[in-house]
Length: 342
Image (tube, rainbow, N blue to C red; front, side, top):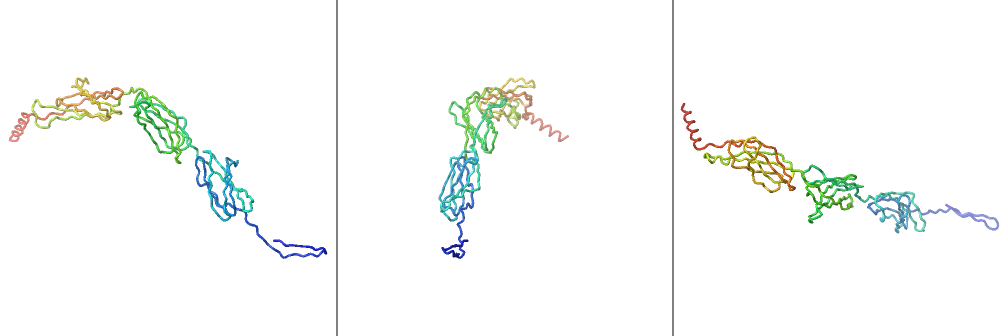
């Protein structure tokens, strides 16, 4: 409110009526929000009114070295700016300064902050080969600075074999480890370790080269089973009486199949089946031409790709009893008939 007062040269005074006016409101930031944050950028949205220009100051800590400006409408409006060329894994502060249509600037007393995610990094990669395992096996260990998946890619350095990926999608930070089995002995491999974070950023280690040791461990034989059977269930002649044994077992690595056997319980093997050279972990061998109702000692033999031979301890078994001959069948029938009349 104001009044005008005056005095003339004769000393007479006068006063006008009271008059009022209203100043325009200062520009205002209504809302401000960090919409998205990446490794090297951040998207800021805000709503202002009464301003002709908005200036976004930002920087590490409270050192505002960055500036993004945008012209605005004096009416209530929403805007978005992108703060770029940021460093990963860093906390930034920002504030918004407004300029009114007359050119006066109003610095914000409010500060806001955000932190860019760290770029995933892989460090301390180590490889350890396990001992007393069926085939060359390694354990790859490494460290990540943020949560990532676990990926190990490896291939034999010579021979141009296809690369193999081993993947664990579980997200974790800190220590990672992964075992890789089924490698070839005395072979040079090249491997890399990778990790992908939840934003899709990937970290890759340098190439690691290693050579597997010589395979000196024979296969482990387990679950041996022996089943006897006759070659024929029909009435047999004396000469045609014959039995067979079906021998099965398992090994913890692919290997060949063979059975040694001999009569009696001494564990001395006078005979052997032919070697089945197909490498497998489940084995079945049939021994035929055996004498029914006779005791045999048998032992299974498996050899892996490195020519390590495994032998089981002797197993004592007896072949099934043969069916009757024609004469025995007739005599048994007559005996049953005569006993009926007694």
